[in-house]
Amino acid sequence: MINIWDYVISFLVGGFICFLAQILVIRTKITTARILVLFLIIGMILEVFNIYAPFKEFAKAGATVPIIGFGASLARGAMLAAKEDGIIGIFTGGLTASAGGIAMAIFASFIFALIFSSKTKRGGH
Amino acid sequence: MQTYKLKNNVYILEGFTMVGPLEGKGPLKDYFDYVIQDDTLKEKTFEKAERKLLYDLIINAVDKAGLKLCDIDFFVGGDLLNQIVSSSYTARELNIPFIGLYSACANMTESLAISSIFVDNKVANNIVAATCTHFSSAERQYRFPLELGNQRPPTAQWTITGGGASIVSNIPSKIRIDSVTFGKVIDYGISDVNNMGAAMAPAACDTIKTHLENTKHKISDYDIILTGDLGKLGSEILIDLMEHENIILGQNYSDCGCMIYDKTEKVFMGGSGAGCSASVLNSYVLYKMKKGDFKRVLMVSTGALMSTTTSQQGDTIPGIAHAIELVYEANCDNFPNNKIIKAKNSKLKNSKTKAKNNKSKI
Amino acid sequence: MDKDKRNINYNIYVESKVPKTRAWPSLIKAFILGGTICAIGQGFFDMYTYFFPNLSESEVSTCMLMSIIFITCLLTGIGVYDVIGAWGGAGSVIPITGFSNSISSPAIEFKKEGIIYGICVKMFTIAGPVIVCGVVGSIVCGFIGYFV
Image (cartoon, rainbow over the protein chains, first blue to last red):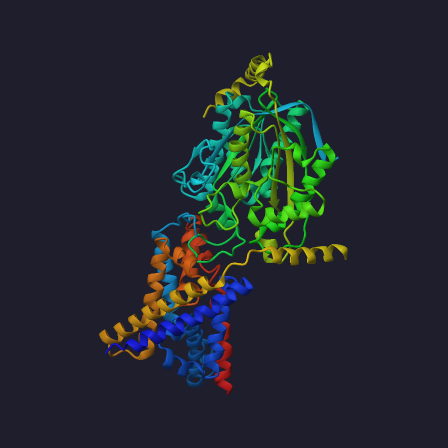
């Protein structure tokens, strides 16, 4: 049932994407928000050119967990909905496809913000 | 002239310092008056903690000097938060006339310089000059939320939690303020907010050079020359810049930001913040001067005068540096009128402001 | 003109003084952390496929992402994620955990300014661009899908 190869390939591909991003961080001092947007757009481009689906088939979670997968699901949702529902789908498709992630991020952040408060960083990192 | 030589004798009567837990583990830990273990100081927010820190600093400094709050004529100071709220909210509690200053991390020497000119011109007898910073409040204002998992570049510095308060007075003590130099705002076109040392080094260079020219002193006349918070990189740049001006900074040069943390702490280029020079000056330097180890000290606090808005809009970072020269007064104990002046001051104040006196005993 | 030249020279000089840190350790750390998070994601994926065989693959993917996002928010809340992030660099940013952390960290940080003006307003200070670019980009993609 559980295929070890899936885990190995997820680890390698996911790690490699982060490796590329870290090179960017070191070379260009890019900030968190910028790097997230950059990889999001890369994911969208991959989806538009139909590269993402075979890539995901190959890399499993190594493709869906990085923010690339988030961008790809936004793009795929919009494109599919545009074909099915017409003009209205162009606007509803993207967020519908990624609603789960965004809703959970907002909901969990809100709940945990109510529970926890920020702590001073322990020096040394 | 940029340099003001004090005509009358103006002294730093006493200094008091408080630092956070991380600074309290550093090499200067034995010099600090008080090390806070819980850096929220039992307050709800870090901004309130910073206020409490500043309030405690002032109260304790006044107490250590053997004065009462009603003997203090002015509170001169500032901090790093927007609209210097920590200082003004502290002044609200103190019931002392307040002169708020802002020159970022150069606040301490600017406060001391202004205070000493006030005392020199007999506008006031005793002034408390104080400033402090809090890592967490500075971090959330200038950078990112504390919980964000981001990496800092190697040129970044660590804002210290802590601060210092000094009592500037005409009552003789072993530490006399000799002259002060106000710096020019200098911008060499650095726009990287994670490289403050490089942005401030040219200002420090200009101020030190001007001070030496105007006082006709040499580098070797000083036992120690201290810059505020240039950090490792900034102080290396300063040494190079000074060399360019044909002034060689030797063994007697040091930087507060490099001194305050242990070498094993991963604080990148060292400490920064207004509290950095304030805590080192009021603990280590004053202690060494009272013992007579340092006879002549040049203290140059440096500040970067940008805001989050200007740096987001891509503006470069202007730097500023103010210098004060402290001189060891060996025969202070022989001053016959030491006690008398002290008594006279407090008596005068008491009779004048009796109502105020009652109020300010918080 | 002279000043511009001086500033350019100074910037070049400062650039040469900046200590060169070895890049390899941080690259390897990013690789390990990013890879581990993706492997954990795969674990969730397999788990949900096993327990809920009726769900489609994309639904399972969504569940997996939601679980990771939830765990990241929890780790951010208890003050562990910033330590992980400082260790792993981009390895903590690029997986969906980075997005989640960038929403929850300002929410927790600015709680002190109140629920409306603190948590709700500041929640998107860092992740806002991701959602804006995501929505705008998806609409562009929708147009592409509609006309092509």
